Image (cartoon, rainbow, N blue to C red; front, side):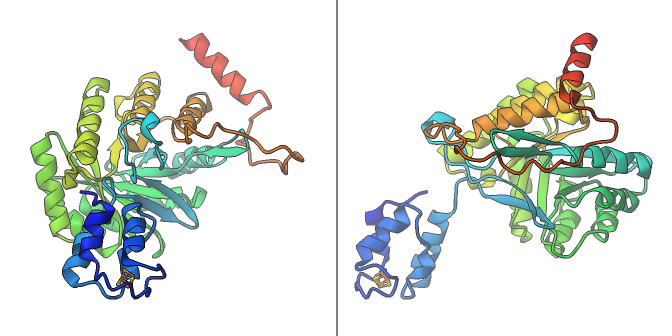
Length: 352
Ligand code: SF4
């Protein structure tokens, strides 16, 4: 629970020694209350006061970042249920999934196509944030290696612990992937893997009680970056599950639900329903969103929608007047023409 400035002041030594860089303890307390300073800046805190302040300073939804080779996809850190209350901060990562049962060349081609996709939207480059490698009875290590041949973006590795172990061996030591998903049967092995590789760990459950029990188990095993993966796959189920999780984290400060949410629109199979579910997940608290199909005509509006939801509503999107920015040709997928996007839109209209 957030503390007021006066509550924080009562925990400080109240000597006004200025070692924190502020003239008085009260001034420092006010900065802590506004989350503009860290408790460690006061070297004279008792251990008990430090623990209390650190717990209070923890955001209601923990930030979880997937990293690799300078790329980063991060989610969490949100403080409000609705954008108009303040703003949303960390836009959800949109991730494209491949299966280890696909031929390596097909995986490479699919990832390369998504990797090359860049849309210039009012001065911002909209891109695919990362990839998911799903164990599906094939050679998991080879599939991870095939993805890495086409992209260095962050990865989610999904499957049983043995498969994930082989996949993790293909990654660089400085990468922070996500492992998916711990459940009631495998959580000990998954938690051990996540700890050993400093990975985020997604936990999957179908009910509130099961989710809470799993989160507490993996937290107790020492996993620091947790992601919540509700089992619900329908639009109705996903909206309810995501809303309950976010509401309990923000309004009740319920710590087991204070993590980003992983959603799987790709599980529905149909590309159009997948896009509709992905849009719903963006609007309703999704933190990492997994799609199976890559079609620019679907990804472009999803990325634009995400951008518009996660900008500050008090600061309209603007471009600074000045010279046209560098228009170096961007990598295009083979066969793409200048009307690529329009072509995809028309094709989908004709299909529908
Ligand atoms: S360092 Fe600590 S005791 Fe000294 S002024 Fe700052 S808050 Fe007060």
